[in-house]
Length: 321
Image 1 (spheres, helix red, strand yellow):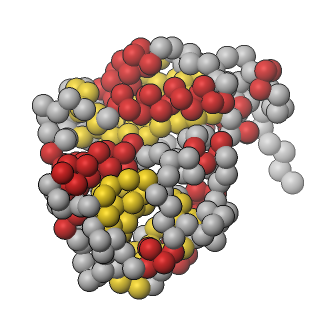
Image 2 (cartoon, one colour; image 1 turned 45 degrees about the vertical axis):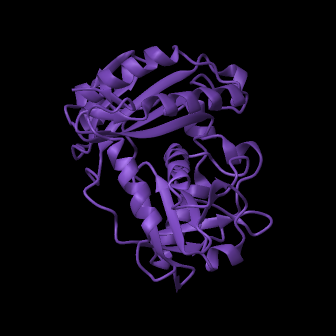
């Protein structure tokens, strides 16, 4: 067997492989600076987030030089940290400023942003109190789908066999995402767009990174209660918009409620909500058409309302460029 060489710092850096320019910029509190060379976008191997999944994260998007719903994401990050006992390394308003600077450094007006907050490096063990301090990492990377030109034609959803998360793990956006990874693998293997998990009572729970909701034949919009799934920021906005549709009598109800398999199979509409899919109608659920097999009027209305909230003068946009 060939003996491996022992390298110094410069030799190690010289051997790092080149990367496609799909990672635009990264901020690391370890060095307290921003880099735009993807080969330098690194996290310490003894960071508890790396080998224990001990951290939280948020993902959001910048569209046409403006970040959508940043405050809501940072507020949820703060709640996640509080639930896990991880201190914020900087106040949330300062964190928002670092996000803006990092996106600007990447030079792309359309991008996704991943904000990771770890308990920090200092140990390869399991004891969280051995970590030196919490660390903040912000990565700006490629947004595969730019803009919101029109409502998607519809997607297919299958039922997942991956056990649903329980308790704290269901409601906190931690970096322990193995079940979510396996759900995405499951969807690819099954040849569908998404899979959705079921809770202990066989009610709909959530997708790998998406929330789900239904519209009944009686024009009621239901989403799984947020004490059983991760409360998505896009789903929250959709439920907010749905209150207006209720006032306009396009819906008779819009609320959180357990969704049984019978309710899902007889639904007039099923929706997927998420940062990347926005509001996407489901036209095939568990191998069968949903409603008439085409996007429904409530999905169209919610999509249009979300799209209107992303115009340049919206109060929910944070200007970067």
